[in-house]
Structures are given as C-alpha cells and as structure tokens.
Image (cartoon, rainbow, N blue to C red; front, side, top):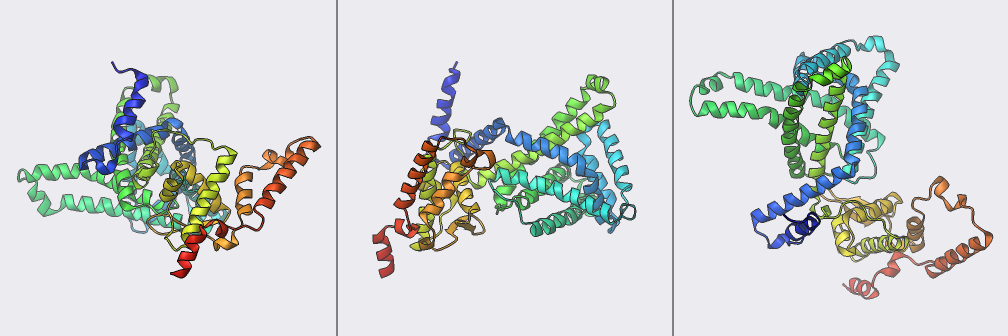
Length: 449
C-alpha cells in the first residue's frame, strides 16, 4: 500500500508537474479536471464556502416570503402564478411529505401579503428584504471570483429588480414550452414509434436537469460583479446541475430513513430538514460557481491551498513590481497586462497577486478595463504617480482603529528611530515617480519610433 504521506508527491508528479501544452487532448482534459477538482475540494476544506452557504440559509428564511410575494405578483399579471408554485414544490420534493407541508405554508404566507394592507412603508421594507437577499448572494459570488466590491447602489437596485421580475417569466416560459412540446399532437403520436418514443421519454426526463443548468448558468453570468464567460458559467452549471440532482436523490433517501429524527424533534423536524436542504442547495450553487471560476482562470489552480502570508518587505516589493509592470506597459504602449500576466511576471501565486491588485485598485492607482478579461492600466500617467504614495499604501494596509501605530504605546526613543527610518525612506524616493522606474533605453526607443 502506498504510504499516505507520499500521496501529495504522487499528486504533484502526475497532475501538477506535467506541461499541459505537451499533453494530448484527452490527457489535457483529464489533468485540468483533476486540478480543478483538487482546487475546489481545497476551497471546501478551508470552510469559507460552508460559512457563506450557512449565511445564505439564514437570509433565505427571512426573505423567502417577500421574494415569492414579488415573484407571484409579477406572474399574477400573466395569470400563471400556479406555474411558480409548481416549480417551488418540485424544488422541495427531496423533503418528501414535509416538503409538501412547507410548500403549502409558504404559499399561504405569500397569499397573505397584500400591498394594500402593508402600506408604503411595509412595501418598502418588503422590497428591501428582497434586495438584501440578492446583495448577500452577490457578495458570496464576488468572494468566489475575488471581486472586492459589489455593484454601485443604482446598478444594484435596477439589476436585482430585473432578475426578480424577469426570473419568474423565464420560469413560466420554460415550463410552458416543455409542457406544450410534450402535449403536442405530433409529439404524442411519435411516442408510439420506437425507438423515437424511448428517446422522447429520455429527453423529457432530461428537461428538469436542463432547466436547472440553464437557471444556474444565468445566475453565474449575472450575479458576480465581473465578466463571466458563457462557456465557464455553463461548465460550472453542468457540474452543479448534476450535483444538484444527486444531492436531491441522496437527501430524499435520508429523509425517508430518518423517522427517528422526526420522533426526536417532533414539530421542529420539518424546519430542520428545510434548513438543511437550503444549506445543501446553496452549497451546491456555490460549488458550481467555484468550478466556473477555475474554468475561466485555470492559472489560479494551485497545489497548495490557502494564501501565504507575505512579509512586509515582500509586500512592498511585490506591490511595486506590479505597479511598475502596469505603468511600463502603459508608457511603452505594449498592451495592458491581465492578472494572469502579472502573476507570471512576478512569479507569485494568483491569490497573492489578486489581493495586491485589489489594494492598488481600491486606492485608485490602477483600474480594470476590458470585457472578457480584466486588463489593468494606471489611473494616471506614470509620471504623475509617486512611488512614495504607493509605498505608503502598501506599508499601512490593515492599519485600522486599534491596529494603527497611533494606538501603540512605545518609548520616545523608539518613536525617534521610526521617524528617522521613515524620513530616510521618503528622502530616498522623494519626487520620484513610476516613470523613473521604466527603463530609459526603452523609453528612448519608444520615443524614436
């Protein structure tokens, strides 16, 4: 038997060391899939996705009635709100009989939500609850995609409402189309012909899975505050869709065999099962988003999990190296580097580069542009960005409240030493800009051209 401690060595030699460019098509796909699986499992083991899923469970319980009330009100205008009830009941099928009870109770609560009874203040609170849920979902997806900020308020309000309004219409349309196709006279007659009939029955069984994948793809494309490629979103949605159906089957089997839990928890059993199923559902959705992220950014899949802590000296050097690379490309008109380009040029891990880039972007030194990928360029010409300003940001990052040197009790002699060191550094780079860090020969050659 292979020694357990040699397993990481086996992983490194068979999965992480091969050059993908030299592998065949199927070997390339297999190695990429293994790397992606390793990265996703590593993220799960860190526990952040679990915490996000649990947070979304709490928010969903608070927001599910207002959310469905708004969605039902939209579909009532079309006279087809029963379609959404059907979709919700199907989502609760893994809960068995408890799911039917919970679904009926939720529909009763929704029917009791009357705009005239709520008043303007109540209606505003209802919409706020719904938008808060959407904001929490976006924050979870932004965490997976390493996006530091959510959408501005105006985009948030309009975008979230568009999903709440358009989403129910899409659900109704997909259900209506599938029902119409299966009830079509031509399709009905074809079911009597073999093997066409078997293929049609198989296709009808796939329709729920396809609908789930389509819904997940829409969520993965829209929710993160960044550009997500359709192929990457579809890849994550396919993985999450299959996992969703497997989780539903496994959870249904668990509910059937959990009579003892019902006896122990009595009336609370339905609520506990409902919360557990919500947690599994959100976790599946977040895992699919993680797959989509690594599919779009394969360079960020690494053997080692977790983010290494940089020393203060390394933080300064890496931050200045990234800023210099962005300024140099801009000044020499060599195109704008992507996050992957900056990771390759510095030799740092993707997560480390992302954090430094986000810090520089937050302090308005660089800005992202581009549709398919994020291309970085300076917010000002390199000759107007002082080295000392960037150094101050890199050195003081995280100094908030009690973690600031202003709250540190130190002897006067030590304060004098710190002041001397800071003055010496300021004098060393006084009035120097990032234009001074660009190779003079390259600048001269560019000017001559």
